[in-house]
Length: 131
View 1 (cartoon, one colour):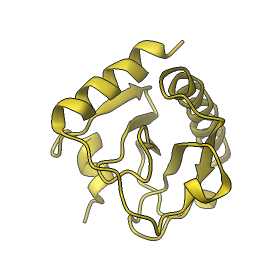
View 2: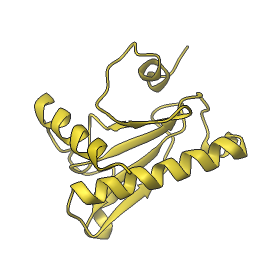
View 3: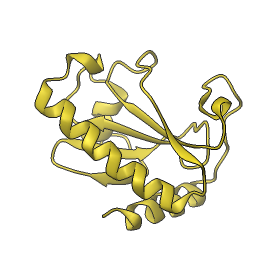
């Protein structure tokens, strides 16, 4: 059965898309740990990030860097935190989240609540900041 992320790639489930290449997709996490929390995925479904072939692995990380640079332009923060957890969804993904201190990247804290309009506006701003 296809993962929820594969279903997003296929257009079966909507997302707040930030950026896309032939091989990768970036979209806002709908249950964000921080304002601006983005998920970056390979379009090809691979459960474990270190099982991704080298070429796609490099593309995924270079794409993540571009998204992180755009995200930092839009959301004021000290840095963009990066995490690969891979437990909840069996589809490799990179979390990018604006952080100002170490604990900001915790997945145990209360999630940020945004309206659909706020998600759309934020996705559009990050997308516009992509180079």
